[in-house]
Image 1 (cartoon, rainbow, N blue to C red):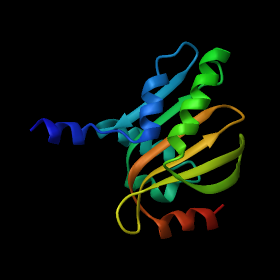
Image 2: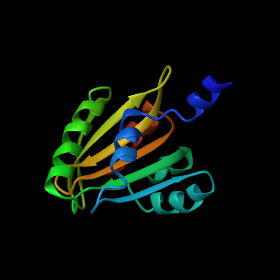
Image 3: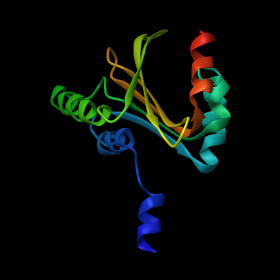
Length: 143
């Protein structure tokens, strides 16, 4: 029974980084799952990821721009380690500068997490759900 509970509470590597730094002085964090996803999906529908908003089960956003330099350096290091388990999908222009896109594959053609990181403002976004590679490719063509 404990292994089932542990599996349900398992976090992806990026979710672990977000959880580690959410309480750091100067960090801003927003997390949503369950009932809070209704609000989060409405917010996502106003972004470039709107087409996959219904498929997002958990959303986590961490902004480290206002954190102390020591915390930002540790964050960068921890994030670099975490992202080694992801595939780099590419770089894309956003209204806040160039962002790096990473994906964590699930089974088959499924993607279980989409990560968007803006290194210039230290903003990290994790969209956890059940997406397909074709869905994500459509996002790229809609920009």
